[in-house]
Amino acid sequence: MDVCWDKCMDRPSSKLDSRTEGCLVSCVERFIDTTLSITNRFAQIVQKGTQ
Image (cartoon, rainbow, N blue to C red; front, side, top):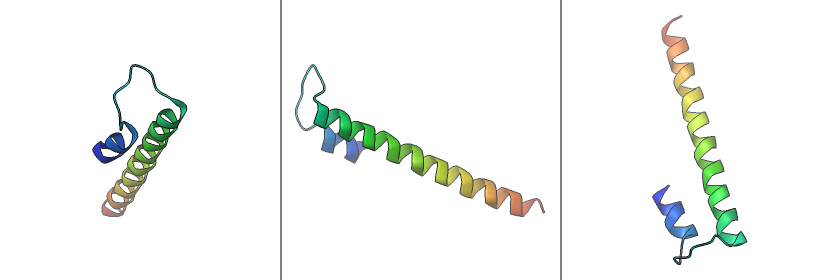
């Protein structure tokens, strides 16, 4: 997330322009996708361990 934030927030500003907002939305979506993938994988491992 830090790398993505640094990439999107290249200059300080009191408002988000459309490019910065789109970049941040993309970061959040990738973070959510990664979190869901890790969660699903963990659930698979746990399920296999209880069988």
